[in-house]
Length: 182
Image (cartoon, rainbow, N blue to C red):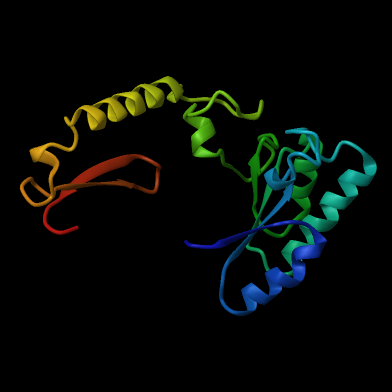
């Protein structure tokens, strides 16, 4: 399903209702919002104080009432995540919000270890930062010395094979080469 993620609390409910009324599925997002990283003092758990907790609860309820089909809870306290998961009429998706949520998500760049900077709630399933740096250095070197692209990778003389990677419903991937002009 393609959808639009709208980050915010009560203040975005009107926008969510507008989008939903026009047939656009909307996923709400409350708790830590990376665009407010500096104002919040970094990646800090949200919903620890009574006022912050109530503000997040009000926001989550407002985005649901406006028509969001699910709500992402980012970096909120475990007790708040559990409470919202029980109270909300839609699924909750946690990112650093405990296993009390109905589902989980991580940012792929963080999960794959593509940078040395990442939130502490992230589990890195790989460490690709050095691999990426090495690949970029190799690429720049080959371009500068004229090795790349070379004749084999020239669209007018080489093959135009493309590789498509697709994921099935379990998250497993397979690949299928496509030939021609794709």
